[in-house]
Image 1 (tube, one colour):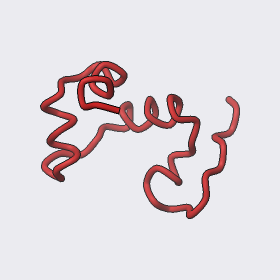
Image 2 (cartoon, one colour; image 1 turned 60 degrees about the vertical axis):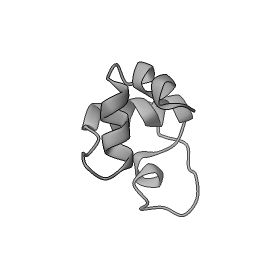
Image 3 (cartoon, helix red, strand yellow; image 1 turned 180 degrees about the vertical axis):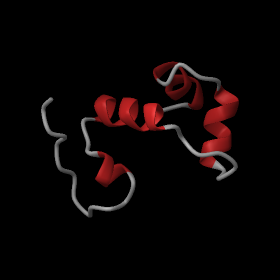
Image 4 (cartoon, one colour; image 1 turned 90 degrees about the vertical axis):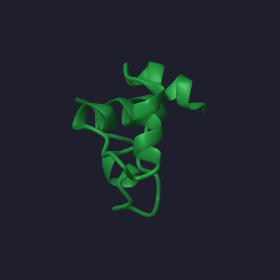
Length: 59
């Protein structure tokens, strides 16, 4: 996935994506939620708190 594609998914700029990738900025909670939903993974997995992919719980 390109920076441009991810930026569109998160409704943000390519620059912000680049800054997050380089450790210069942190993703917002909203960003994390959108990424989890898009890739169908839990926030724990995305944040490195789980070793295996587990599907997020249904609301």
